[in-house]
Length: 217
Length: 217
Image 1 (cartoon, chains in turn purple, orange):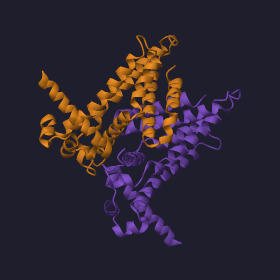
Image 2 (spheres, each protein chain N blue to C red):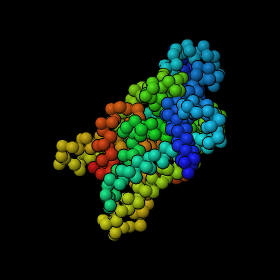
Image 3 (cartoon, chains in turn red, blue):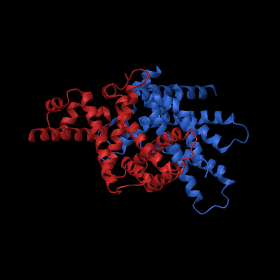
């Protein structure tokens, strides 16, 4: 038992180090060597725990997604037993936007995985950047945004259930489009917030306005 | 006169090559050497035309923005003498989304500049990735999105001018927020379209829905 926990802790020590390395230098900077050095362990130990570079990068991506999920769950717990749909969507988006150092690092790391997938899927097969690009592709990282769109769409359906029972047939498709637009806007705002310090003071107003415009039918 | 035109053509030959290099391998792949090789000219010639690497990268960024502007102007000309505000906004967004090979390459290049600005602005001063990161920062690339937000806000004001002359004091601020949300959603959709092939078939519906929800007051 203590040994298993120890393994988990060691894996976390390594993926934490990988996140710092990727946040600083992009996906290309993450090698067995650089991450072992950052974690203060041997290259052999990183290889022992993760085997291939691909497995290692996927574990790093999963760790970021899992942390965002944990933060969201903790925030949701503060909303009471039957939270308003809008409050749930706000909680999801709040945990995605880079409003503090931890969420900023996570957003930068997710951005680096996106950039890596771009090179991997390039017209020439990604021969340009090589390295990390070939290891993790778009399909490996689309699970989380697709899940979030579904979760947001569920909340939009709840929000609109009362008002629109006289619905036309297009209702459901509209909800899915609105959910995807909400997540797209949050992703675009994240990009802006990462590079434009002046945007931070507008972030709350933008988030509220987005929900004002897109949660109701 | 012919000499000036020749200079312009030579600069374009070089920035075109730089765009292909950056699209394939990210900002870090763009060196005097790699771009000279891609353009089929000497390193000395690239240095003669652009001097520093920073000047060279900025010229590449400007070339992408200028092409998007030219495409937008051409599209606008097809809309007639007094185009609807919604049609103008749609024309802007259409030229940003990566719906063909040229716009896809441009979107990838802009994405690479964004990623480079991230490393440059990192907490440790970007020591991780070095190379391109230190050369072009966020402030160098924020002009275009800020201009687009202003242009979209102008169209939203036109669209709402008739309906909302009984306006409360918040009107103008709401327009600015909506314009920023529209551009953010387009940026987020661009990120998705770059890596998720299945999103292409939804792109038009998403764009129309975005305009349905955010152009009117």
